[in-house]
Image (cartoon, rainbow, N blue to C red):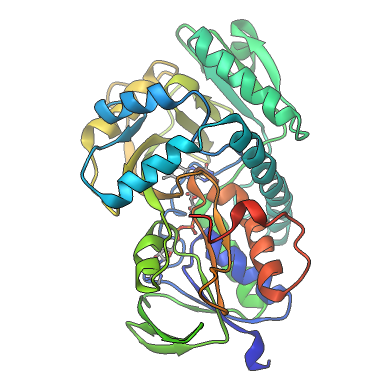
Length: 415
Ligand SMILES: Cc1cc2nc3c(=O)[nH]c(=O)nc-3n(C[C@H](O)[C@H](O)[C@H](O)COP(=O)(O)OP(=O)(O)OC[C@H]3O[C@@H](n4cnc5c(N)ncnc54)[C@H](O)[C@@H]3O)c2cc1C
């Protein structure tokens, strides 16, 4: 391999690993470095949904009044802790300005593109990896207790239908026939039959082993703490295990990106959207389908021998503490829809920081200041479901190929 094709990917989450696989399968010589074990960041315990029907940005039109309420209510499914911080102030300002229909339409357009491409890639990865990633295409059922909740789901269904994603409105009877485990008062819901889910860590591991077959080198427990810069180029990385030199570098460090961006004098406004996932032993009756409990914003995923309940989003800057009342809120909210016992057998409580940009669109592209750096970060709630598509765009741009996705909405210099 020539030095030209030598690329270091910083960050071994689902985004970094997908990029490594894509680049290596196109002939590049790739090294992935991670400060911990690859796949143990936000990609470890997410809901596992590969659902193009949810290809929405975080800021949505009509959220303004709601977002003021979130600032004041620590129990709301989306919580923004008010604190004096320039990063938070700038982030919130851009977030508010992104709550408009034009931005929504444009974002759904590009995010469904990445997600549909990714769903097909995961189907192939499942076959190639001997079905080790728990990939299942059972669809997704959104279920609501209130008229407003179901109306919002129907609105989303109509929005994504324009991008070829099928969905079907169901009344209470229809919802309960499809998912008999649902209890309590249900207003109705929307069923998206073509959606999939998988096991998030197993997916990163399958990507890693496919990448290794293409010659990718993986260096765990190797943290980048600074950069050696010469003019418009990054000469090398200073890591906790020595200096590392490459021709090109990709920054795929999820919610850590703001800090590393500062070392490069780049503005990467990524905050953490802290969420939790609880693994419980199955309760009876156990849900058969992945469920979105609309009003509580809880994702329920049936697994082999357990159930994952995931949800809440608390905007933070690198705070990984666990808030017991928010964990409890997930159980309480799930209990309104399902027969979750008073004392369920929880085998794991996990939290992760979703890398959130203020406009809800990932940052994929070259920052103007550097000739040999690509950013691929800020995948908010959609990192798993959009990783292979995102990797395709990153690799197209890095290798100078004609990109199959429009790169403009993802520009690295838009903030
Ligand atoms: C509760 C919850 C549920 C979710 N459900 C879904 C879902 O169903 N579907 C979906 O698509 N998405 C979901 N998400 C979002 C998804 O998990 C993220 O978008 C995705 O994991 C981001 O991947 P990443 O590779 O960018 O980040 P990460 O997985 O966090 O990877 C970044 C990596 O960079 C490494 N790193 C950081 N700094 C350095 C450094 N200085 N040097 C070296 N390495 C470094 C870290 O160790 C880490 O491994 C969910 C998130 C949460 C919290």
